[in-house]
Image (cartoon, rainbow, N blue to C red; front, side, top):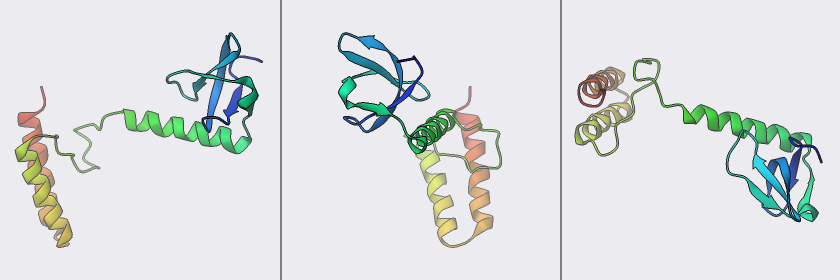
Length: 123
């Protein structure tokens, strides 16, 4: 078997990229990288086109979520910093405004949250 071949491990219901052989086991790595695992060769089969595409999309999504949001990106609302009381209060104000369909107040809360985060949380 060639390294890089995509196989479906029926024991774990995962698609993995064949790396090498270790004793009686095949070594597989998740598509897009990650922790390798050992699989019994009898439990492996070639991945279908659908399984390969699904694994590739999952890996692309994982890479996307791994990038922290840019605090200067004004196209997205800011996220409150976990554990920060003021962030939590401003987020609550924003959620109340959204629930009341008061878009102006929600925008105001976003501005205040960004200002607070720049002052309190950025180096």
